[in-house]
Image (cartoon, rainbow, N blue to C red; front, side, top):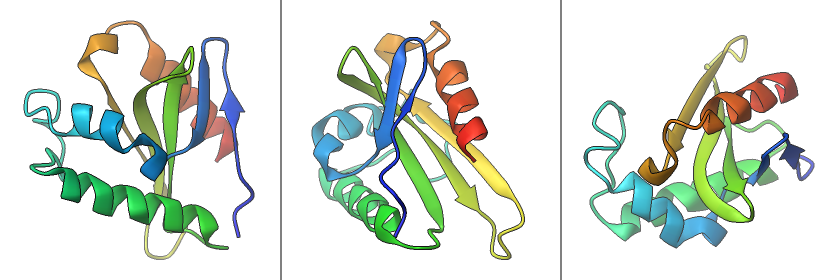
Length: 120
């Protein structure tokens, strides 16, 4: 099992992403404009978001997860997510992220991504 991991930066808290953040995740993951360059988004129903977040919770419980998704919080408000994804032979990680559009342009994802890269 992965140890519960919480990361902190100067302005942000990053913690395991999961069902706790269903409503706020759906808000930014269903935004067509916000997700237009993303491979697996937008979510067209809250059920799609629920399926993804259920898998996020499950991955945090695995000894060797396929991915780890961190919720990004600013002053206790969930504003986005940063994830790391292993390839099939587990020799390379891919970094992915999404941010609620109300928080764009403030350097939050750069800050969060740096913390996740250092963790990885």
